[in-house]
Image (cartoon, rainbow, N blue to C red; front, side, top):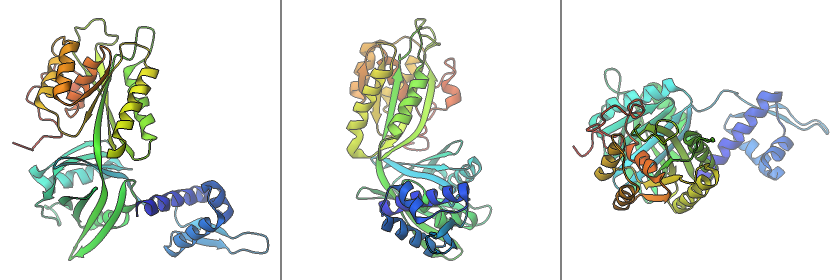
Length: 380
């Protein structure tokens, strides 16, 4: 099912692009652009024509091939990506939207419907939701109730099933858009009175947080730039879903640092079977691209952050910490370290992810006692 959905999405995008560029497309153009046999191109044009996504502009005449057009150049889905990571009974649902307004709408209503059962974090068009497996109590309907809510999250084999209940516009999104988002395997729709209920299936992925530090020098380089490049590089791997990039400040009294002692972290969701490959590729990439021999990498798997690791990150914002301490904390917290002295900042980076960005950039702010996004409202 996943392969069919992915191919359908790719062919639709290709046909819409050609329609925008020249007003029509032919079977031969789809064959050449997609690199598939002519029969495959014809089959997909026929299938999408039957769905109403493609129309025949001109039938074939003599040696002139038939001309087709996508019915609309507008995006069929505002949902770009929907994917899930799991750590024990804790699930993170990531939903990337084409519109920050739509992401804000869904975030507001999901939080309204989920209450303390769900933590919602929005960053522009990216919506991140943390929730435990199981049933969720939510009243869905017209104001003052939530227009859309997650009413259950379940694990079945290697898939996460989200049960979503909605009315109005969100119901249209559930039934007509979410199935086209990258990462979605299948959507099953059920009508329940005035509400629409659906089951969204996604892979149960592993969550990786990668910290990087000490990759630059006085002669050049920038750790934040290398972190962004790494995130883009890893995004090219199949079954890797990049999430976001963070920059945080540590203790500014380490005067040998090049820019006030900042470090970076990236987050991504990965197919469990390729986690080791991604870690190896991360170390290779950073070692090759770093201009400093003291570069450091830390890789933390999972959504939860141990108390010892959190404490280390907060300490690294207040004072100088040793490499020996960093390696000891990493070992007890199951964090993989590679490299030189940069492992101190790299470990602090993976320890601090989950705290508000505007606070992480001010090393003078006391962050002790603040909840992390992955444990806020949980285990209280």
